Length: 275
Image (cartoon, rainbow, N blue to C red; front, top):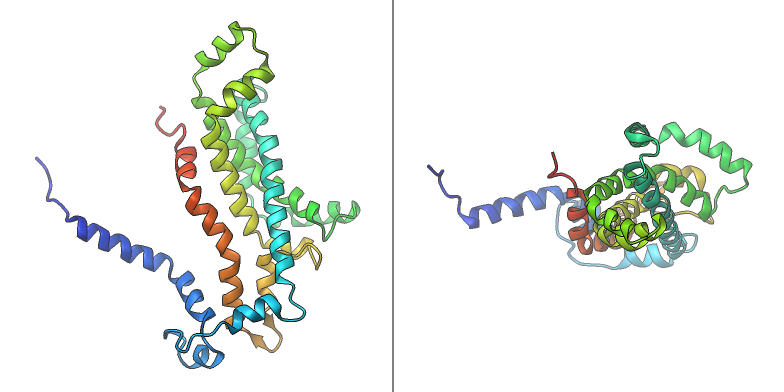
């Protein structure tokens, strides 16, 4: 017995409605970024007519706001964190799963660290980075974001390593391959979807980090998320400039999310079908 069929058109319409509702904040910011200041005040829900690029020019060229520097800092911090997290989490996950170093409790303990609120780590990190003379530096943010994103990367990669058939490794061992050779030549190619998923999540979380960016950085290492907040002045909120800054800051994360979606889904689904 089969239930009533649902029209594909109805499903498409429902998905479109949900997509619009979910993206309403982004759509609102996009429309506001092209409105004049008068239209923002008088017609906050209206279309950007007439359309203006004034706010994008303010964000990119206004004196005192070095937005291109914020972009370069965010990109350097995000890519640096992805590289460091990958270099640490891949061998760590392999050691925990295959070599049984630390056992399952170690992975659970590491994962539990990610459940704690970021504010829990603010004071210890601020003291350590201040002592080391790293405040307001790219390296300070890379160290902090590596610590914050390492747990979730290790969980994803541990599931990926567990999915690799042990018979493949045993065959490599019989052929005389060392543990390093097995990891680099056998495990890594099969672990590519999980690595891509972990790298994508790390990049997005790092790019969107705000709490540590506003506390650890002041000027030289300031990121786009904090840079956007500079348009909230003591005289009022420059909604048009804030919206333009938000739209510019989400371009790169959206591109990564769209092009990496396939790897993200396959990487996160790794191990989910096992009992």
